Image 1: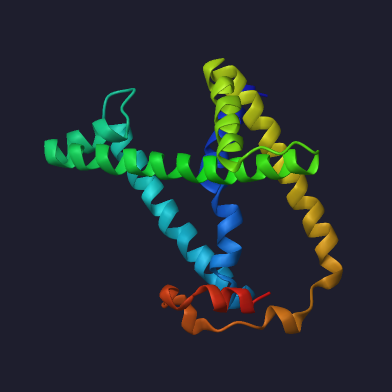
Image 2: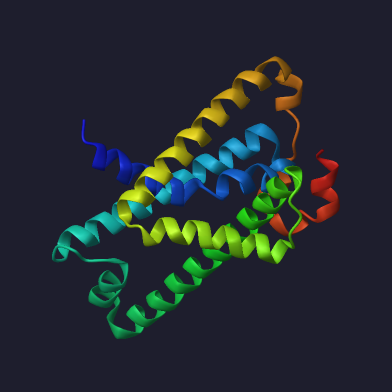
Length: 195
């Protein structure tokens, strides 16, 4: 078995579903189970089609091409500049979300163990710890990511096993399909009403 392939797959899985795994159930709660399932399968189809388009462009270009060089070869200098900007904004927003969420979780874990520090300090400490993992090289990132992903998959399996006794057909039928085209109607009060 090729462990580098598994590590690469887990890196892609970790970056593509990491934050969405937490946000999607809340964002689609008003749709109910069947509406959420329909929406998620539709999104999967669009993402799969986009992946095949990226793959086709990547295979036509020289080896070691990346997203920005593909945009430059197919869309010109303007497309390459837009690609750079969009890519950097995406990376900045993902990094900000992970630092905010991870810092908050780290702050909570420290508080439950009796260590009281400000939230900003917990975020800085969290960033430093994971920055140290990145500084140590790709191998350490791979191993830490594998541990986190296997932990996440294990937690998901335990959650599914624990929640099965509470699943009922009547609850799965709840939800309104009108929210599939109206995400702006999901205000804080309607999301809170789902709980």
